[in-house]
Length: 105
Image (cartoon, rainbow, N blue to C red; front, side, top):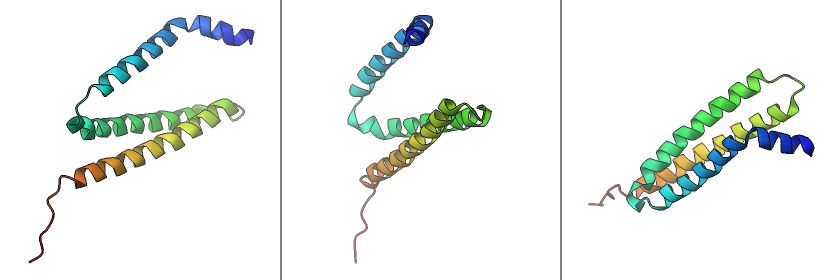
């Protein structure tokens, strides 16, 4: 437990920045008009793609006995992939609403 407190005190500024970024992101996203949600979803998919690539790099460079890095990397790949696929499905459904329906003659 003491090592956890040491890690927190060593990374205190990064933890504060992470907390501020979370609040800032929530505030920005909550004030976005509904019309802009599709472009934001596309950008979120791109960010998730970067997360997947980073996780693959972490897995590739992790030592074979470093199970924590391997498990976290694997989880990041799986969850990032689920996020990308789900984002594309939601974006596709949203864009379907704007397509003109074909009329039968």
